[in-house]
Structure formats: C-alpha cells, structure tokens
Image 1: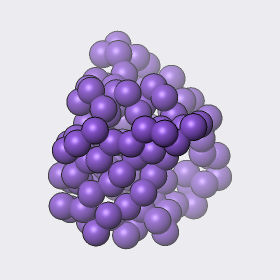
Image 2: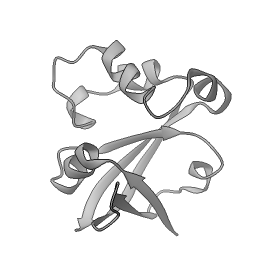
Image 3: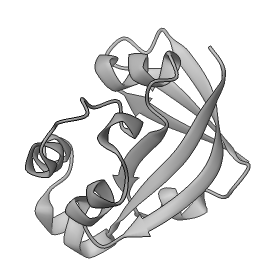
Image 4: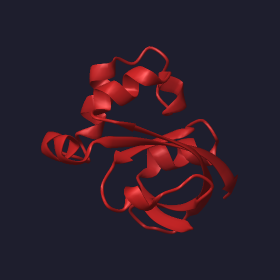
Length: 116
C-alpha cells in the first residue's frame, strides 16, 4: 500500500539524504494503516514541489515521545548524537499536542529511501 505524508524542509532533507531512518508520528487512524513493506511518499512543505519515496522496514509503537526517543540513537532521527531527550520531545510538540500524544500513542516508522 502507498501512503502520502508531508514534511518540513529539515526532516525532508534528512530523509532524502538517508541520514534519517526513523520518522516519528502519532499512532492515529492514518498511521494505523501503515504496514511493513508499504511505501510512503513524503512531500516537502510548504510548496509541495519535491517528493521522496521510502519503504517501511519496521514499526515500533510507544506510549510517549520520550519512550520512543529513549529506545533509539538520536542520529536515526536525523538529530545530533548529543541531543537531550527533552529537546527531541519538545520538537515533536511543535507539531503534536501532549493531549494527542496521550490519546493516540506514537509510532516510529523505520524507513529506507527508495527514490527521490
């Protein structure tokens, strides 16, 4: 199955260059449809003029962003090696509310770029 999602410039570029191998999302209705082997087309925001396609290699579900970020090395998210977990969590709160995090839980989409 193919899925469509959007990303802002920085994470888009990290995925495009292969530096980011885990994309973090809420485990909402849209993400519950994602399965191993599926493809995701990420569109770069805000202009939506560039796309990158990835294959889903793994799915890891967690109750919170903190738990998720504690389970993997920061570089897998395209972050610097020495970034604090609290900073990683705060970055996610730019996009999602703590209330939604509690309601849905979160998922780590383990991905590999397959085209640009």
